[in-house]
Structures are given as C-alpha cells and as structure tokens.
Amino acid sequence: MRYDTEFATAIPLRQPYSQPRESLLTLFSEQSLAAYHQGMQRCVDQVRRTLDRNRRPNSGVEPGELQPAFDAIDLDRPLENLESSLEEVQRLYLDHAVHFHDSRYVAHLNCPITLPSILAEAIATPLNTAVETWDQSAGATLIEQKLIDWTTARIGLGDAADGVFTSGGTQSNLMALMIARDHACAAMPGHAGNRHHGLPDNFRQLRILTSDVSHFSVQKAAALMGLGYDAVIPVPTDAEQRLDAEALETILAECDRDGRVPFALVATAGTTDFGSIDPLPRLAAICQSRGLWLHVDAAYGGGLLLSRRYRHWLAGIEQADSVGVDFHKTFFQPVSCSACLVRDRTHLRYVTYHADYLNPRDQADEGTPDLVNKSLQTTRRFDALKLWMTLRMQGADQLGRYLETVIDLTRETYRTLTARDDFEVLTAPALSTLVFRYTPAGVEADADIEAVNRDIRQALSRQGEAVIAATRVAGRLYLKFTLLNPLTQAEDLARLIERIAEYGAARATDFASGASASPALARQTP
Ligand SMILES: *Cc1c(COP(=O)(O)O)cnc(C)c1O
Image (cartoon, rainbow, N blue to C red; front, top):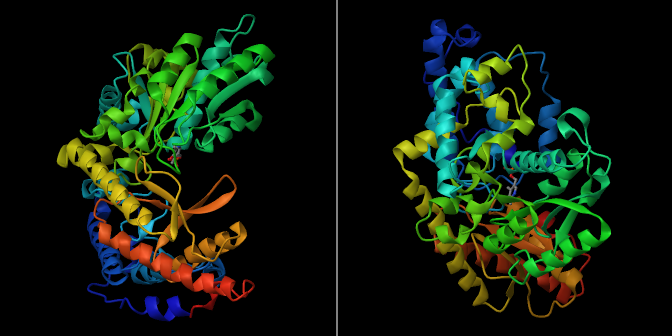
C-alpha cells in the first residue's frame, strides 16, 4: 500500500546513537537523567524529521487500511529498543498524523501551537505535577490561580470572580450548568439542595435555553445532569446565526405560562460553525431581569479577549455568571488547556467535596489553596504552565494579533469565494469560519450538489491535499473552512479553492452525462 512503502521507508532510521535498551527500562529519577535526556533528544529528532519530509496536512489513510498493522501487534511482547519503538510509532501514527500547523488543514477548531507552550509540556510532564492539592503542586497551584485571576480580569468579572482549568469547553459547559442548576434548586422551597438530596420533585420542569446553533455539549450536559436533551430549548437564530432575543422573550413567556422553570441561558461567543457571537448585552439584561443564570460559552471566541482591535465584539461578557474559555483554540495552546470562570466564587461550593484523605475541610478553613475544591476532576494535569510560558515569553498581544490575522484572512477568503459564481457562501464571516458549497452551473438537484460536495471533501482528504470540514445547515450539506493558522497566506487558500473547483467540476460532469451512479472521485483516484 502506498503509505507503507512510501512513508515508512522514506524516513531512514538513521541511528546516530544506539541507546541500550536497558537504559530506558526504568522510571524517571535522578538515576535515569542521562537516558531521559538522550531519549528525549531522539524523540524530538523523530518529530523534526517527520515534519521535514512529510509536508502534507494528512496521509488520507482509511481505518481499514491501518487496522491490519494494529492487528499484527502483540502488546505482551515488547520491542527490542527505542529505535524499534519509534519505527513502529512512525508507521502507526506519525506517518498519518494530521498536521494542524499545515495551511491546508482547515477543518476544525485546532490551532498551531506556540513554541513556549511545547517547552512547558517538556517541563511539566517529567515532573508529573498534579494540581488538585497544594501538597501535590505548590507553585503550580499558584501559577494556575494567577492565570485564572488574569482571565477573569480580562473578562471583567469583578473581584469576587474565580475559576479553574478544565479539560475543555465541554467540561466547562457541564460545570457551569451544574452550578447554575444547583444554585437555582438551592433556592426552591422545601428542597435542601441537590448535592445532598438529588434533584427536586419538579426537576422535569427545569429548562436550559440556548441558540439552535450552540455546541452539542449543552445537550450532553443536560443528559448527564439527569435532565435529558429535552430540557434544552433551542432558541431560533437571526440571519447572522445569533440568538434571537425576541424569540427568547417569547419562549420565556411560554415557559411561564406552562409552568416550566428555566434556570440558565447559554449564550455563545463564537459558534462552532459560524463564529457568530450572540447579542450579549441584550441577553445579560434579560437574564438579570428574570434572575436567570447567564453562561457564556466563549470556547471559540475567548481569544478576542486579547485582541485590541476586536475585543469590543465581546462586550457584555463581563455580565455573565459564568464563562468558558478554551485556551487550546484561540490562545494557540496544546490540547488540553481550558478554563471555567464564575462571577461569584462562592458558587464554586456546588462542586466541592471534602475528603479526609485529600482535602479536609480544616485545610480549606486554614486557607490552603486546594484546587480540587473547585474542579469536577480530581487528578489533573498542570495545563496552566503552557499558557504561563506563552504569556511570559510572547505576551498576550502577540496571541491577540494571531487571532486578528486569521480573522482578516477569513475576510479576504470570503471575498475570493463570493467573487466566483460557482460557490455559494452561507453568511459573511464573524470570526474565522466560512460555510459554503460548490454549486456548478448545470447541477440543480440538492442531492446532486450534496454528492459533489461530499466527494470534493473526500477526494481532498484521500489525496492528502487538504482537510476541510462539512456541516449541515437547514438540511443541506455545506463545506466549512475553520481558519486558525496565522501563518497561512491568502494565496494558500486561493489555491485550495481552485482545487475544490477542479474536483467539483470533474465530479459535476458525471451528473451532466447522467452518470451519477459512477464511483466517487475519492475512490477513482490512484
Ligand atoms: C469547541 C467548542 C466546545 C467544546 O470544547 P472542547 O474543548 O472540545 O471540549 C464548546 N463550545 C463551543 C462553542 C466550541 O466551539
């Protein structure tokens, strides 16, 4: 198979030094520092050679092609040495790894990452610091806390704000909604609180409001919280894919009439598909007037906090009761690195449990900063060091400029697409996504247009030419660019658009000649 012959052998397993197997068969300690250092260097070299030689965004491999190599491996029979292990990792993983740093990777919200953040991983991983309690982490806890305080200050949440690092926007949404639910239920007469007694009798009336293009993790959180997907009311959006405040007011009035109990509104600052930002000031006013918890999911748009030019797009976020920010998206940090922030730190008590063996109450009373007291997780990676070293070396302004660059790039690419008559672009870009489809003259039926676009995407991926996303809007399949690479040039994307049109035009002739049942391009190509 192509990837076997071409790639596994393309990287000669040069052996500049052959590390004795035994030297690495041990644990990290002061005894093994030499082996650790040598082994690290060898792995860094491997990554370097992979990137030097493998200049494509992906390999195009399919699961069925890679699976046999895995079937042949017996995990109970270790390999000879580091070289054999690296050769295997190369074949199974590195040869096919998707390169988020490649300008032709434009699929999901994955970013190229800062160099200081990678160096931070090289420090935090060997020491294996876990940040749940002070006695396991010392300075690491204070590094995380200072970054939390910095983030809440950037948002403008006020002096009583606090928060904690999370695994991502999904966990932040769950955490914020749990806190909102427990806070609402704590005020219900005759109910002593969810933490001790579970949900109140009227739990089937509880409702979460969020726009119909918000992230699926809101539904998932509702299910995990015992409320079910049906507890989430999708609020219609306007033409710019922002939550429609009028529609929200109507739904709230209906809830009142029907005895439903809405307890939280999840506004999105940067929807995953469109980058659209809900009208935060207006929504904050509605929430305030009704005592409704406002959670702002800024997993994607959070990076605007660092942009001098576009920070004002987030106006109103400072009025939120809670905010989720994914540093591993628009702060250019490695996965995972994220935070959930709350306006009133006392609300974090809803996720606190004191265990005598870990974080006894008297320890908290004495003022010991045990981060586990405000986290859904217990053992937790020291993900804060990445952002810390990035800020201390590059500074926040540079991160803000990265995001500005991709926003500007998106606008330019939007102009390129709209200047052509063979593409339909759904909306003007808000942040850095473009949702569009190839609509050649002569292909009219929606099903045919869909087939053409699906095949374009498959063909590009199969050839290792580009990785682009797809989504569905109002039942129609669209292609999607998510641009998060500030090093990408407008010309790179113009070339990609040209390739999309070429594949699309070739596929469109299949329809014109009545051959719509012919095999997809993806499978025709060698
Ligand atoms: C990515 C994203 C999430 C989920 O974040 P993870 O870090 O993947 O868990 C939530 N909300 C929005 C708007 C997102 O774009």
